Image (cartoon, rainbow, N blue to C red; front, side, top):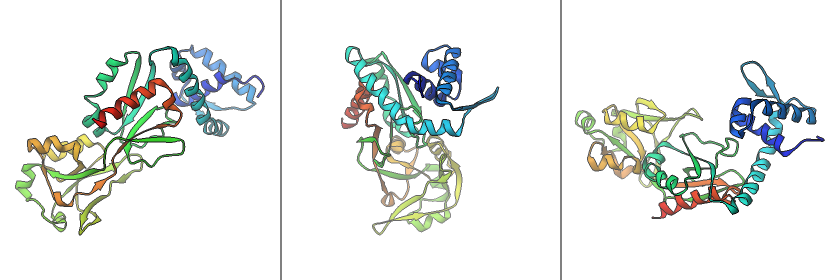
Length: 299
């Protein structure tokens, strides 16, 4: 590995993250030929081929995949360490990526992030709206918001909300046509707008409270969706009974465009947590967003 440098390793990781030489060049603000040359030199120093290249795509070899998996945490740690020192003399700046489910964006962040951007104009904030559970280190994301505090090693979670309630609801038109179920057993005569997790390709289990115990319930589906906005739209259209955490549909309950169903059976689920790499909080641009979000939720 004589002659191998940290900058060559950074180029390698940028190519993996972006999926192309050109993408890595844009990310690193380098010329594409310079990125290509750095990769060739890196492979020469290692004595290994890290990518299989064709005219259409570039893919990791087995050696490249092993190198990436074994160095991704170390590179992330070094990057955070360098940035934390560099930022001592500057205002918070640079790219900052955060991921969250769509309902979190719609319910909590939609009206919040503009104030952050105005307060820190030198930070380039990127919002990644996804209901999938992402590996933020491998995806090059700085932090995320999700249910529960069960995390991978090296990650930190900060509590944002208390446990949340998952609600059932339907439109007034649906209730008028099919009636409102008053017992769990009555759901067999109704239809559910079901949610499917894209990454796991599984239906979200529906648990309702029966005699103080959570009971998994299944009844016929009217529609299967993988987007919470579509869930609400389908319920508003009278297609069936929807299910979603209460804060996401509370405005519809207040306006009576949606009505609660079996309210005394609603289950409680884990609250929302902000999570991030243990090392990333040392970087000022990351820390100011952590503080901004947690302070908002505390208020």
